[in-house]
Image (cartoon, rainbow, N blue to C red; front, side, top):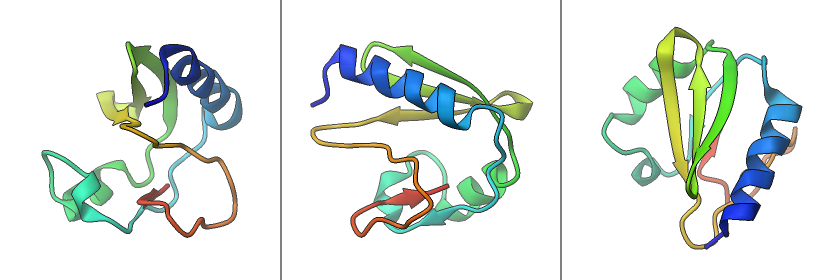
Length: 95
């Protein structure tokens, strides 16, 4: 599991790299990763939204979108977030 310092580093990198950018498309490769909402509704609600702010609460990343929407991300045991133009083989969700 990533430690607190690693999660903070990820938060800072995301803020630097993607803050202010719009989510043009959403691809969910593993629907089990989305909790509390259907994959179809999740996609419809965040597509086209702007990434406004990146927060951290303990080891949880909180991504604030426009319209007061939030993505809550826990990296679990060995999770990672990658900012890339290439599609990675083992990713679960692409924004």
